[in-house]
Image 1 (cartoon, rainbow, N blue to C red):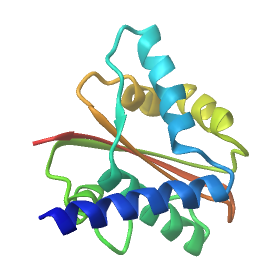
Image 2: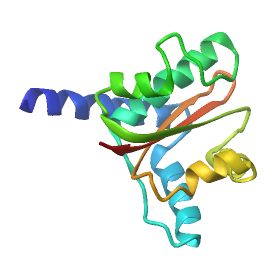
Image 3: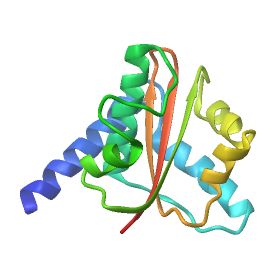
Image 4: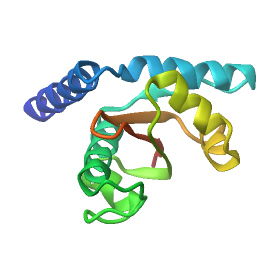
Length: 146
């Protein structure tokens, strides 16, 4: 059990370092999301390593096929998140392509009613963030544990 937790932390740190190396800081995206939530008197989300892995894997998939999609060869959003060990009661996903930084990505999502609804939903507790500089693909995975 201790090894599993340690291994999960290593993967989480690796995902964050990968994103930062590619010019994106998941913590900055989280802070932008939480600023929007605070404006609406909603509780803050926290980053979750399992959602971050799911988001990064999906982002890498979209970059590899050069297409924006919620579909994935790994299965549905629900299946992809469950495969990372996140047992959920609610999940949602925001994707985007072409935005050059975190602020632009958040702005795009906040200007879309469905994406805005995901960011501002009170039912979500956790966030995962994925980014690929190969086409500037972005993924946010939202979740609430079961």
